[in-house]
Image (cartoon, rainbow, N blue to C red; front, side, top):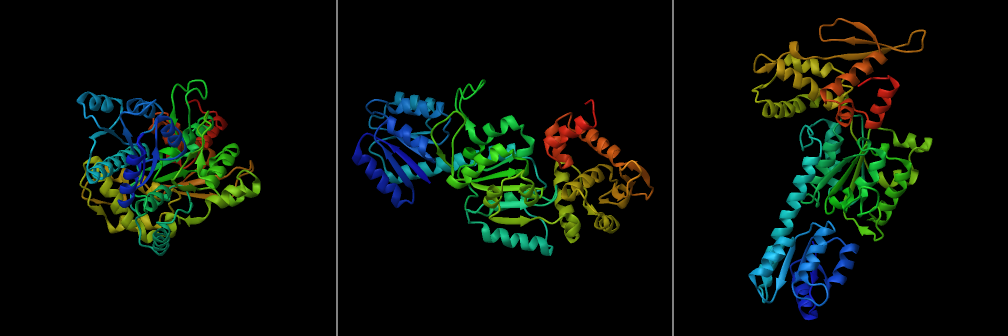
Length: 456
């Protein structure tokens, strides 16, 4: 934890710095408001201690500036006067606490730690609410591939190294990222997730780096970007393969220098967030094609975790099904106790090209139609896609095999259109949500809609 002490009396600054150091807290001192502004632009602080009476910019004015600039760290106002009016004004302007000189250093430390912990908890709750719900925050599975992944996670937990998680869509890459975060030294900090493919290209830079007031038309105030929001925690960049080349250059510089600059800003801002990225694309192939920077790839690929598809760890299906059913019971108010042995065997023989996401979809439907405490094979809607050589037009034919074993030849294009239309209707036209369900990027979905000339 790092604290900024703002007081015009040198002796008081040094005494507080020494005491905080004995308590394991790092600190910097500023002799006036202008010095504090400079330090706040250059460093990241977990809290501020600000004296009320200072020459030039007083403590109230500095608090007002801090909040107007978008800084969210806790602030304790310090005064030798102890007037109620000053305390009320400080709290109105954005201070969280007020302490009167002379004060007990131990009491000050206790208040500081409580405020910092409360702020970290609020940040964690906010970022979790912005993230998409996974099946669980824990990593489920006891198969050999999953045991190896858990071992890797335990070895890298306290390392600041960047992590690249790869695997097919629906294998649980965000679940793994959250698991890394939860067992790391940064677990008390926020976990901030952004889907690169789900953000329009013209907005992506401002989402990641933030912007200053007046940086562009419509920038009426300062916006804190994802890198800053993740300070003291983890930033998860999903679908990193969809990042535009122009932005890849900036991303590389961030990883090299550990600093960002907001759009329209001039002062570099240090970042202390761990970077975890994920993709279902072959980045090595993209590097060879020139669509992904080789230097950025090596920066991201310090530690690599390859998630196996569900069909390669079918012994985990009963465990996963149990976790999913518990969640569905809570959401729907059902009392489904499990699956029949026949249903479990049917799931184990299914190819699961949609992986864990497909399993969750199948079980959600089964819970709705189940008549008793156990899900039987009769309510499992298992469809297998079997490709075979194309016809004379050069296309391909797909045979959809429902659970009753009947077959119906259909074109791959028709199946794609049906899947897109269903997903968009299910999410009431929300293309980002529909793309996530389909396991593709938002950009790919938009291209497909244009390609098939869908009037949606």
